[in-house]
Length: 261
Ligand SMILES: [Zn+2]
Image (cartoon, rainbow, N blue to C red):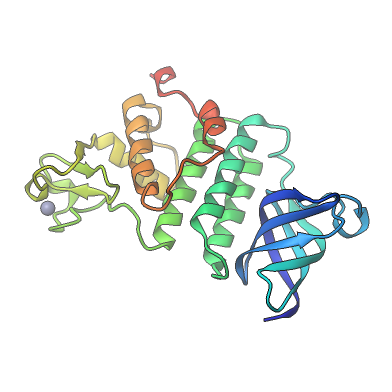
């Protein structure tokens, strides 16, 4: 595929390189993740206009080179920026986390327009959202659960992962600490890490999965919110082998469950 290309891209990371260059990790709608060097990016306002930034939808012209994993970024054009994100500390924290999340959960040269569009919708949602950390969190959790679904490994919330008993007919509902989802008491194996799931946690996770209509009261229930976060983190740990760098900043923006009623 050597030659000149044009793609819609998001910047997932940028690193300054040598005197005036930038190396960017890009996520192209039609190409998946790849890296590109922007020569003289810190000097050329005409070709790049300072636009090589995460959380913008860009149209990128680039050259793929034979025998090199590093494409050459020729120029970019900002197609959509999200001014509502800039200038709001919490929105930047959520957006940066989602950007790093995308970088870690995608792989090079695997075109994923579904994930690309999902990330675009997330930025758009963040851009327009009220600056309420709980509502921003709904958007983030939705992104995460959709990512799991598209990657083929969502936590099962509706039935026991082993015997298929519907969650509604279980006397007690457990979740596997390994992150696979719900399991009924009869299927728990000796020594397997599980936790009892509150009904409100399930309600909240289902709302995160399909956030339509008014948020459930469970969103302001501190135990349910803390548990829903743990269940999503457990699933994420199946994909991530390290803690994301943007996580501590995100945590300062998350509503502390202790503040909730
Ligand atoms: Zn079962």
